[in-house]
Structure formats: structure tokens, C-alpha cells
Length: 286
Image 1 (cartoon, rainbow, N blue to C red):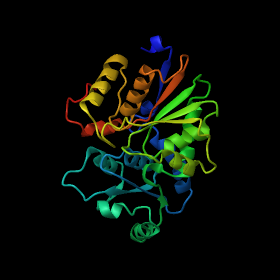
Image 2 (image 1 turned 45 degrees about the vertical axis):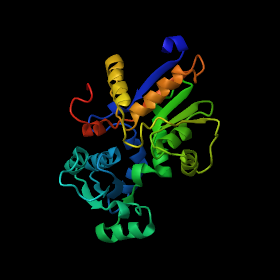
Image 3 (image 1 turned 180 degrees about the horizontal axis):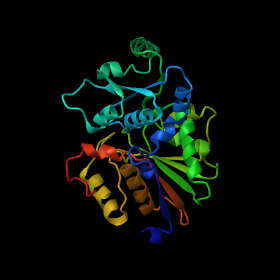
């Protein structure tokens, strides 16, 4: 199909940069880690759910830098911890479980102050790294693309932090495409604008919606089949939360002639493969 459409697709394999934690997460943590390491408290606190790639990345970063890490976990402590949270514990992260109702207030000054009284001073990392510092860290990804001829860069979107970083670091003549993995997500552009601080060229950003397959961390048999086909055809492992939905959206858009002939597309593989451990055994071929 790609030859027929005269479109090329290449993959920036951020999932291969580290044998334990891969993808865009460590990029987003870069400047938070710098601040934390320069502090007296040497403590990093952040938030996430039971299968959060962000939590694992934070825990791992702490383990290799000697920084204390604390994870505020959405939901009551289960009888059996997910493999993600077990890995966080292995990397030395202190876990604190809060109810979902309490978790909704995680960004309020009152809640942050109560945490500070409980655990002491810390460098706060918003969930998913959603902060201008997180976006500036994600912009460092563009250093890996320097010198590679392309017309489009594509990424999956959750908090839109990586998307904003790509916008920060990309030449203005390149199109940045975000594929939302959230159902009913209508504020991506506002999020990007808030993170960049100085606004952005709306003509440079394109959003592909309707590829959430039921919502965040949801999946269908169609999506799983696509993931297995990508493995068989390209030996490309994808995760069902982010990258599979992004690749599906891009391939479908190419099929529907949404890209001009001659387009050279770089798809960002943002890692997150550990999330596939939540799937039943033998669901995937890899």
C-alpha cells in the first residue's frame, strides 16, 4: 500500500533506548530530575494508575540517580498488585494509594500541601509529566530526528505533553500529527497552548480523533489483530494503550489518501510495552 500511495513511513524506536524503561517518559522527566538532583531533599513525587508507564519510568530514574521516589496511586490498594506497581517497588518507589475521589484533587494546593506535611519536601511531577518542563524535555526527542528527511512527525496523545514538546522542537515547515487515545478528548489544542506558553501555529498541528477504540486503555479484537499483524509483517511490537492506536490511525489515513504523494512520515514509538502485561496470556504473538 505504501508504494502505491507513494508515501514512506519510518519509526523512531524510543522503545529500544533502555532495556528496562523505554519511550518518551524519561525525556519528559529530564528537567524534573535536574531540579530534584540540585535540591536538598532529593525526592521526586508523582501520580499514576496501576499500569502507569510514567510511574515505572520515575521509579527507574530514581533507582539510577539515588533519588527518593514516591508514587501516589489512583484507587485503593488491591489484594494483588499489578506487575507495573511491583516493578515500581523493585526500583525503590514508595507507593501511597488514595481513593479515586481523593485522586481527583491531586492538583489542588491543599492536597499537595498535605502530602508535603506527610512525606516532607519534594519535587512535584504532574501526572504524565504534564508541565512546561515536561514538554521541554520531550522537545529533546527532536535531537534524534536531526538530519532525517521528513514531512510529518506523528505521536499518540494522552496528556499532550510529548505533542507540545515536538511542536517546540520541530521546524515550522514540518507537520506534527497527534492521535488522541482518549474518548471525547476535545482540549488537546488548549493543552498544547498552555504547555508551550507562547502559542503555536495551528496550521502545523493536525489531530486525528476517533481512534481510541472505546477509550483510554480500551481495546477491541480489531486493534489486537492489527498489533499481531504489525508484528508478523514488520517485527514491530506495539502497546494497546498508545502506539497501536497511533499506528492504526496513520495507516488508515494513508489508505484513505489523507497524505499527499511524497509524504515522508516519522512515527514516534513512545514505548509503554510493559502495559501489555495486563493482557491475557497468548493474546499477542510477542
